[in-house]
Image (cartoon, rainbow, N blue to C red; front, side, top):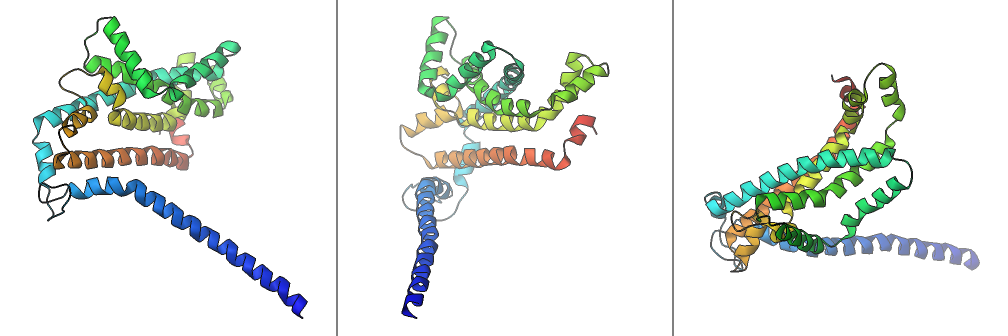
Length: 285
């Protein structure tokens, strides 16, 4: 009997050990996320502080949000960031779609080399890209401002768009486009009516993610912007060098909420298209 009970007791101890491991892992994960998001939570909390303090929370007020919307300098920076993000995202999508189609459908070593080159900007430190862009613009005599920031952001974002869309292009069924060609469509019509609608969910997702990335970008904007107006991230950095103001907490909270909304949109949109099966996209209904 004792020999029979020992294996059973050993098995119970082992099960208890296995049950404890997930609890320990859960505790470590909870501590990690708590420490990770604690500074962000503090920024959001003190953006509603009733007094001008970054240490003592006293009362609840929206005065710092009202101060932001009455600050003409910050609003000008916000408009510039939105304009740069919109234009750079549109340009990066147009170029990225063409590159993704070309890389997937190209044959030979040229396509392989080009695919490798497209990955280089993803692993290159952004500060290197920023210094290189600044050197280039200064070398050709361009005045730093809206145009230089947009060009730098487009160059930096093309690789992200291409990588995201390339996998989607590779998953497309080439027989669909060939069927359109057999039915009398031209290459451009097949691309516009068949291929691009099939890529639409991936294009929207790539556009939303790239827009959020460009809007929040600091390094490239810092090296390629002019004096005034500056992108919002650069303007915030310029102000916090003199001390963090509660208004900056409000701006940071709004930027965080905007970025989260864009990322959520990028995740939800492909799922919505997936539920329809893609039929409505291809038929235009």
